[in-house]
Length: 377
Image 1 (cartoon, rainbow, N blue to C red):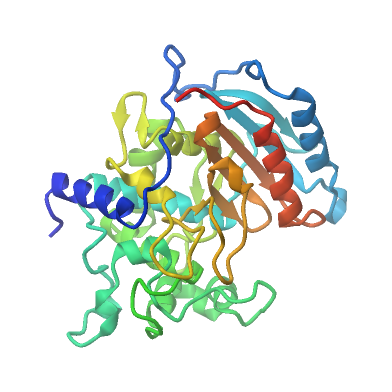
Image 2: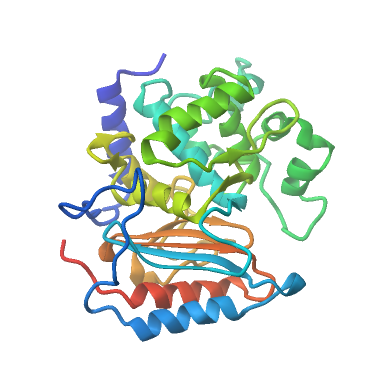
């Protein structure tokens, strides 16, 4: 049984900040500005914004064209102070277009874990409820949900090379193992003690996805209703669509779909510390935990299913500029939902990386961020 909710929330907050001072404060929603539950408010960029730098970076992003002549960037949205101040779409895409997440979906699954923790239905420091690990002598029984969220479970299910058709992730999503993705990911052996080694793993998110689906009542219908009722509906998200494997586990590691404005709504929830229009949806301390790198020695830039500003460890990669104090959802093809608390800024970029590459994409997004002034704490 989960611990009582107050003790659980205290544990989340203390453990998240135990290893280091932690990230800075999050900005409140400006007084008098409504949350975009019904519709996004729009405004001019604030005074002090370098509009020429913003336009130059956006123009550059839309200038890259890949397969079939389509622009790599299909949607670019910037919100500051809880209002949209810039929004552009490539031809053939608009506000109603759903965009696939790839690995940005991992962060959506993290939000659903947060809802279960908030309701007292999951304890992130208890052994993860995974049937394959329940043997009395099974060392995997020590793996916690915290380990899964921080990608330091120690399991032998790391993604491997993105170009390798035989990589674990390729088999998980496209091979015959994809029929039962979570079962395939959970049946591997432990190769590192839990908490001691970071390794990026879509399989880890699939294990979490099965846990969430079972707590939600099992089956596609139960999962869809839970995601809708506890997360999407309170935020005014109407476009969220999940794909499922053959046994009914949501493909939370790779295949959620939303419009750019709905991706921005989810980002705003994190920028507002898990509180939406006066209603707390995440446990206190959850977003701090999200933004704090996990404790594995080889991890410098990965929090709880979100990427964070920091010095990359071996095998990790840089995100937005180190001066920007960002935390973000990232997905293959350049799906980015970045939150920048010191500027009260939210950047959503969706599309592909056919011609542009990640370093160039990150530099353009960093240029957009730097075009906006810092806000007073």
